[in-house]
Image 1 (cartoon, rainbow over the protein chains, first blue to last red):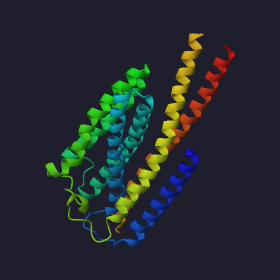
Image 2: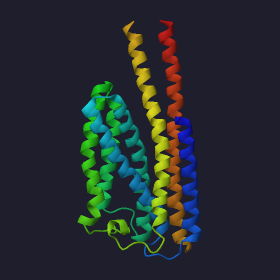
Image 3: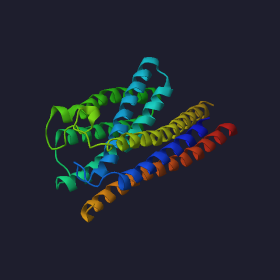
Image 4: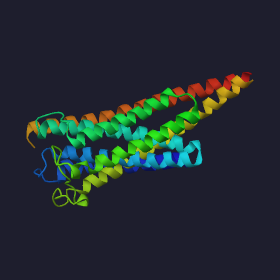
Length: 226
Length: 48
């Protein structure tokens, strides 16, 4: 069942991302009100994927703290790791776009700084998980960090409305921005869907790995108790 | 698209996909390591 779902998601992701690549480079008009706008079609969906992943991890962490069931902790860990990978894509593509549009790789702007802080918080989450051996303590501390880290996720999202600095203010019409032009926004959402499918596959695999790691851990304990 | 713009777009997309591919490879490597470890620990438990 899991395998079939993964193949289905892989096919959907491959189709959506390839179709969008074709649309972005061959169908959409060459001129737009955003310089090197093709980068935005990956930069923004990567941010959507990362931030929504951190929010899902927040829910799973809350459920772990409420129920004490390890499956929620494993799910939170899997989602956070995948979201962190996409946050990396977001930061790096954003930096390359900034070099072209602004002439600089980086600036300590509110959006950029809060996103980097977010990346550091969740990188810290991954380091925390590796540094604690005891499963209950690891799960509890990770859940607390995930919940606290989510405050910054909200800040990242709202920062372009609260602070008018270097990063463009909301462009997408769903955020009351001016829009990118007729028909130019749709590939952003389709790419987000494609990346979400890809993320779902990676999360399933990571969940399975977390389960295997727990099995190894319990077998080791069993072996030592003999 | 002017050549300079193309270079940036191409560079950004290449790096984005390289990050995703590197992550997928790291997951696959971990998967192999975990399978080996599980087999080893299972044998250890069965042997006791």
